Image (cartoon, rainbow, N blue to C red):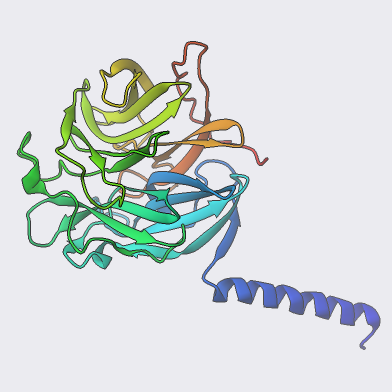
Length: 326
């Protein structure tokens, strides 16, 4: 029997169906974080963050190594957005390693920055012709892409750096734009390098230099607060996150100690530091999704970061509860 109540329920059901279908059709998936890890339907690693127009964009590599296959298998990057760090939207993958036609794969650590209305994605990939890892630059008019190769060639290749014989020393690019608009890129494994970027954000502006840091492994990240520059990075192996401070982007950098301890059963430890709505957050990955999480199936987490009165940073407390919505 059809009555007004049944018609009302049918209408609501149809409305919900249309809403869900529209979301699926748009390629956008909405979900609510219930603590750490914040993303549980996919494995995510090497987080980087960007704030644009009041929204946080989280970029991550996509771990896809099947259970029992212990190696890094990463073909694409993922992007998520939020305005409260709890309610999230997953957007379609905006970039794959092979979107750099000169690359043959390996979507390793990356970062996106904004300048002059464009969004620039600095990414680690395996070079197709020059042995070893390389850094490419992609560009988009939107923080969710799609992104396209901005150069047609790599920005940094393994034959440019000779301080170590390993083939993966040109990884983990991070870009910091100072208050005067000058952009700098930091990167490296076992040796940390940095260089100025030209205003077009796709070329090095002069030679690169070494940054002398104790027990540097990889994953540099630079941020600034109250006149202090902070350089955090992964140290030793399994990796802890440590940090140094300086009054100048050119150093000298003074080592300040451990920021985040070994992240459980993940050998790597890769961080982003996010300022948002008056608070600071430490974004990282661990291997805590059971039963298959680990060093090659990692998951992004977020916990709050606190400073001491002298500008040093308190050690991160990793939690399963994570952060609360605004």
